[in-house]
Length: 102
Image (cartoon, rainbow, N blue to C red; front, side, top):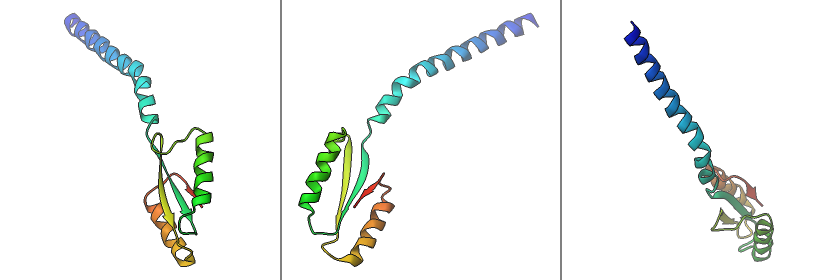
């Protein structure tokens, strides 16, 4: 019986060591996941939205978001067609963008 208890203690020690090592290394893996690019949608009524688009990008840069580095933007332009806005917005929702700027 004493041999069985020693074996159990050794197994328990190994288990605690493995779990402890995983718990210590886990926070090191989290920052790598946080660097993943966020995806946002940009929806504009016009055909190119050049003025709105540049102001939008400048605002993002001021808050630390840079397209291509830590941010991806899905662009949708309605070409002055009101009926297309709903369709384009639905497409962005299906793509699970984090937010839609319109």
